[in-house]
Structures are given as C-alpha cells and as structure tokens.
Length: 327
Image (cartoon, rainbow, N blue to C red; front, top):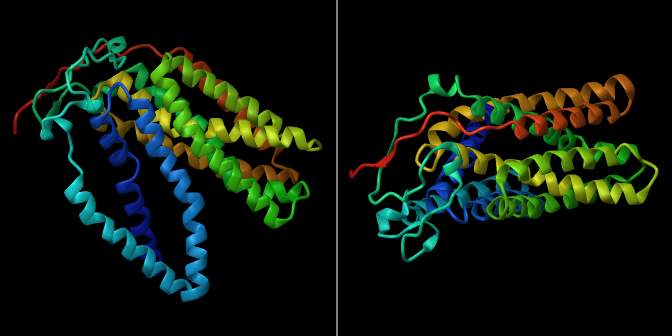
C-alpha cells in the first residue's frame, strides 16, 4: 500500500511539474520567456527549502500521518484554483503574450531555426511540424537532449550526496545540512538569473558558459582543505546548477517554436532518464575509493562534453508550420 501511494505521489509530481508548468509559461511569454521560466523553476527550489521545515513542524505536532494529510489537503485545495485561474493561451482572453497591449514584431529568437514567431490570433494550436520520426533525424534534438542529460547527471549526483560529502570533510550533520540548504537556495537564484540571461544575450552562448562554469564550480570541490574554495564551490556550483533546468525548457522553445514546445519537450525529456547514472557514479566512487572525488572528475568531464555539444548546436533544418486554428 505504501509503495502504491508513493508511486501515485511520484506520478503526480511529474504531472503538474515539468512539462505542464513549462508549457504554461511558454504559452504566455515570448519576449520575457527566459525570466518567466526561470522564475517558475526558482519556485520549485524555494519550496524545497521551505516546505520541509513546515513538514517537520507538522510532524512534531501531528505525527507523520497528520503531516501527510495536511500537505495532501493543501495540494488538493490548489486544484480548483488552478482550474478557474489558468488559461492555455493568452489569446483566449483577448490578450497577447507578455502582457503587451499591441502586437510587436516578436524577436523570440526562433528565427534562428527558420521559424517565424508571430503570435497566434486565435486560441487552439496545431503543431504537425515535429513528429517523433522527424525529431530522431534532427541533430538539435539529440544534442540538446544528451547535453542537458549529462549536465543533470552531475547535478543529481552531487546534490544527492552533498550532505555526506560535507560530513566526510569534517562538518557536523547540522552544519552539513545547512550548507546543502544554502546551495539549494543559491540554485533558486541561479534558475531565475540564467533564464534572464537568455532574454538578454544569445541563449546558446549562455548555456555553453553555464556548462563551463558548472565544471569550474565542481573542480573547486576537489580542494578540500580551504574554506575559501568550499564557499566558492557552494556559490559557483549552486548558481550554475540552478540554471540547468530553466535553460533546458528555454532552449527547447527557442529551437522548436512556441506552438510545438509541448510536443517536442515530452520526447526530449526522455533523455533525462540518464540522470539516474549520477546516483550510481557517486555511490560507486565512495564505495570503491572512500571519496566522491572520482565522481566529481567524471561530472566535470560530462560538463565539458555537454558544453562542446551545445557549442555545435545548429538550427533545425525543418521549418515548422505554426498555425493556430479556431476551436
């Protein structure tokens, strides 16, 4: 029974997060897409830092069962609110993306993929441009998927073992947990910041810089006898780690278009299964050597390879036919 409900919880988390939330932001923002996606992603990290504290208080006062019930009811109360408030497209409300009052020439950078970025005049989209068979023959699909999967391998591997690593180098459990929470909070700032960078600068260059900086941050963790390098590791790695998931959705939207975003994201997200290797690499490194250093070296190599792949990204050759049809 426990496993059944835990599976339901896992499926539910995936259902209302990830593709769904990213699609909602994608539909409503074009010029400010980076900042909007970064802000939405930052909320996940922020809740991860706040909700455990609330849950702990609830457990102390009501027990595990009472705390789980309170959290579950709170989530259920949000469902009707989302039903009444959320709309799929701003055009359904007689509005334009980004809250603009007059339709500008949207420079959402999809021009680099040979697509136009005109805002739809009517609600309800049709995207027949990127069937799965065509995506499999598209270099940008493979490069984006594999590069961000490699970045995520290092991210989940480090974050899953960050507290044990801090205790291994001499911190108490309380101090180690505090340092891990600080890293996560810096990550939430990074999610918004890197998304904002994608609005201001060429997104491909932004993600290449992010991958290289992430590798530099991981390399700082190899110097364990200096408090300065430890602080720099927490700041640099935390900041760049946060930007990975927010820029992931942004790059998909840029290269494959606003209308086709959900249909492409659902397939390209399959690559993220590879992030499970991060847990295995970290565990094997510690079991075999008594240290996470070898795992970090592997993560650094993966970051550098991801940066190289991202640097070679080219616009998809197929030009999407992005049209909105009236319902």
